Image (cartoon, rainbow, N blue to C red; front, top):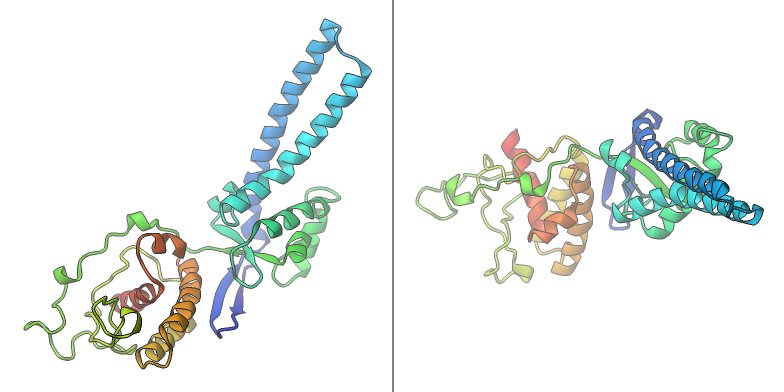
Length: 303
């Protein structure tokens, strides 16, 4: 069964993840091993063809046969171990199977997995696989409350589920001017757009406030800045933390650097539960505070 995992950071920000249980991980693991064993089968067929050809040609020898056998063992190990290491390192904790099943390997503290941890968890995979078909690994996963196998315990990692993923390129952001009156214009009501998270507006470069943000009247709550992005897995605690952070920043209780660091940490966790990679949003010019504001505005617009 899948369960909830709560991770608290030193900044008192809580992230919630849905742990991927044995059932959730079965099909992705089956797909990964199907790819691996298909590759091994093709390589084995090629090696056997070469070996038989060398026998008929009379150039084969006992030493050459032993060398070929040793080389095949090394190749098999490199493919079985290197497949997971390569993809989980390059794809931020995912393999083709994990990506198809919307699951990901992360560190136990909620941060993205690193190359060293990927190598450790997959080196211990050999032990998990014993005596066959992950016998030890499945037994340990049944016992552990977070469904971790020995490799995860050794590397300090955990496998979690991701929400519905929609690419950033699929999102159409409608300009504010086309959907609502601009604050201060004749068509704007004094109470329009007032929400419980206070009067914190999106980024304003001309503002004298530190970092370019300043308390202003917010946009109308019916405007959805994140059309098509699922907020299903964003928890009430997430919204509470976002509101508290923006309120403290708006009151001047946090300087820009402190607010930016906290907002970035919170935005990464919230984006992950939305099925998004916050680094992609940053590459498109979104900063963490504007992203968190958009999450709140989108939530209000959908209620």
